[in-house]
Image (cartoon, rainbow, N blue to C red; front, side, top):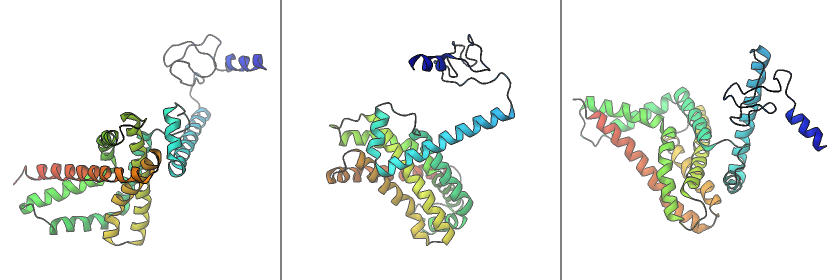
Length: 270
């Protein structure tokens, strides 16, 4: 049995010679995959059938990874993190990729269905002007502020890092280091943005009240962060109580930064 398995691993495919070198990095090939860079070797010419097979294989692998990752985030986020720390990562989607994917989904939903929401958002900003802007500066401020808010899910990639440092200070006795706490935070924010995208899709479809839509993102971030990070760090009430000020401070920093950038740009002109 062992000899048969070894033969299968070392027998080259009909497209690869026994002494073939990897076309990507030049290392010696053993089987269908390069031991150095991991690239799968194909026929020397690209065919329609091979293009379709590669696309289908990659898409299915990605979909399975996303659904498997989301399922564990919802059911047992602690197990997901333990697998990741133990280097059992092949079957899961990396938190960076997952957050970018959910952020893109959120951006598409708000860009295609949120015209009424952004108009109400703009009106409320203009009516609540307490910054003593001129009419031109106010228009510029509102446009920049709305533009920055529309891509807030992408800003989370930046603001999850200080959150990880705050978690490390609050849970300095925990076995997870700062980088691992950052991964937990990224997964939590990816789930939050995904939940918000689905909620926004429903709210835009049924024309929900503005106050409900404006609080959807904040609520999604708060609950997802508390659930994923709290469950991963033990799930006790004391853990959730220590997490609450951290996520609130993160939100304050993020929206203060967005407001500051919009104000600086607005004041550059008359």
